[in-house]
Length: 377
Image 1 (spheres, rainbow, N blue to C red):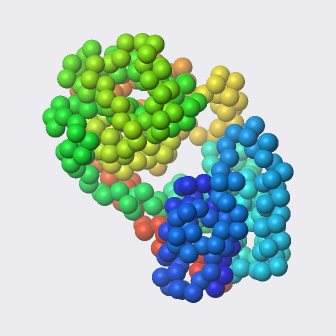
Image 2 (cartoon, rainbow, N blue to C red):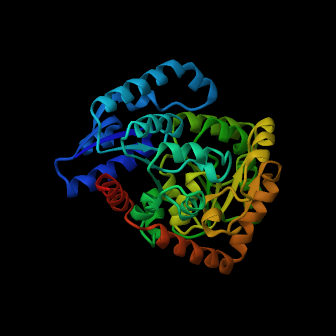
């Protein structure tokens, strides 16, 4: 069997590697080629172009590489049209993959798209383009599958690989020992984001919230994991402009371990919120954008919840403090409510466990089964 496959960034590389391994368990001679990262290549894929050429974010950056990206997509289409695979699989990267999928599908090649764009949240008219581009959508979350079913797009909910890899129970004391953190006492994990823009808009208020909390919980330890040296330097620059909270500890990387060691997590909305939920750690979610961007997004978005735990729960399970609401006092008060009310934190964790079990479906095996069924149909 032959498969075309394209991933555009590290998260897609991880999903692709799991999918390739699961298909090869059933069909050891299966061939995969397209655009792959190091993990997919290690799993057996042949990469015709470096994945880094697709790993571009931001409007200006995309415009600067537009001709190159269009050229790569055109040459890939010509390659697959001349050598048709049994199925072409686009992993995330919708701006690149959906156009390629549509051209191949119109030529009679079966196509699947793994990881739904946030079409359920904004620009919902994109679902028509998706319906023309793919024979099967593979989603990570059940509410995404419900959206596609409502729009009569073939879909399968396969679960999330993080739910498969993170244990249902994570020992807080083990995480604290591994990070050499205090074995007793309260710990707040502070995650203001992995991108420069997120730290620019949130770091000062997160630090202020930690300082506000330390004044009310004198024994509180605050731990901030920073994703790389650049983000650490950016965070330290903000720290230098104000009084640092007492007992603040900076950690290079290890964000999952820091969350596992914590009693409560204060974080920027994103994948970290999903990880905190799977770790069963109560959280407060915040986000802030540039004023004009927020004004535009607010008018386009179709959901009243932004964090994955709340979207998955179908209710406002954890506090979300967005834009002007993300002040140090409000962030601190939301965290404090967990620390002062352990029963509320425990109730939230019960719901987290239910959601974790629903997402824990052996995603790679589910995706492989769906792809092979599509190939055989």
